[in-house]
Image (cartoon, rainbow, N blue to C red; front, side, top):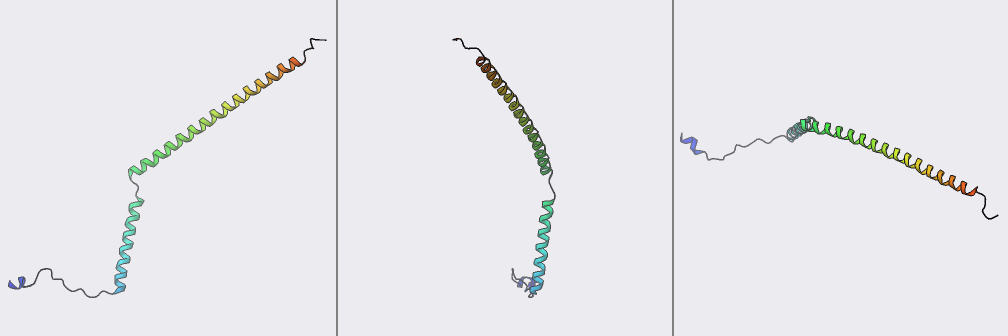
Length: 107
């Protein structure tokens, strides 16, 4: 029993020198494992990401529909305004022709 206490604490056993190729091999395995684990965590979408992407699609569709309706309103407004402008010009020119065709008063 006294032999057990003869050894000092914190004594490390000597490790044999490791082959450099073996060290490289272990490091490569570790890096491969690490990259595979990272890619697995990235490829699995969470429920929150799925919900957000669905919400983005929904909002995008609504915005696109709203943009088209606004463009339609503006184009129809332009057509109406253009027609009113043309009718006003026609009315103006018709009234001018009417005044021009009148006989002179001082003859």
